[in-house]
Length: 246
Image (cartoon, rainbow, N blue to C red; front, side, top):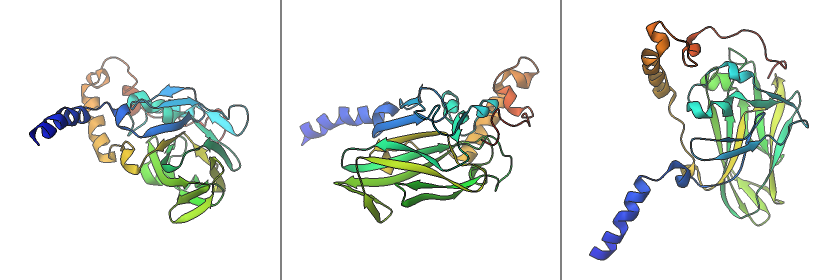
């Protein structure tokens, strides 16, 4: 018994200091919508948006903002986006049986009040996985927001929220054009695993405190210099994006 406990100790230490990328489930698909390749804080490799030149509009209007609730290395995931004046979506290959989580990343970079952009997200044309999404109402402007959707695949069946549909080796996630502006998406990834395997976003209030501390320590707070962080507290440009209504 003592030998067994002793053999477990190094493993426990290893897990306690596990690199974040190694502690995730298996990421089988990741794209930076409207943007280029990017490797995030957790080691997830996002590919260039496959819809460039095909569907909708790619926008980097969010680069005008410093994104809240996201590590500075990963602001780009919430600054670039794809939107469309009609329903659009992505087909994602999912070939193996098992449990999965679809992670959808959003950030409202244009509107400065709730109720201006509202839309649904539908999986495989049947399952409404996010209803009446109003990003601004949830977190405000320029703040990261993720939606986590758990589902499972077994044989030729997809199961989600007690519902079932036919599975043919891929899933289709669609952003539905509603009655308030255009649907959009900032980034997507699919992970083989459960919700427990998905990195949690920091609470909004925790990030507010960190921002205040950074402001006190920044060169701008001492009356000299000009930094990207300092620009966060300057008035944001009121003009619209290069392409209207992202």
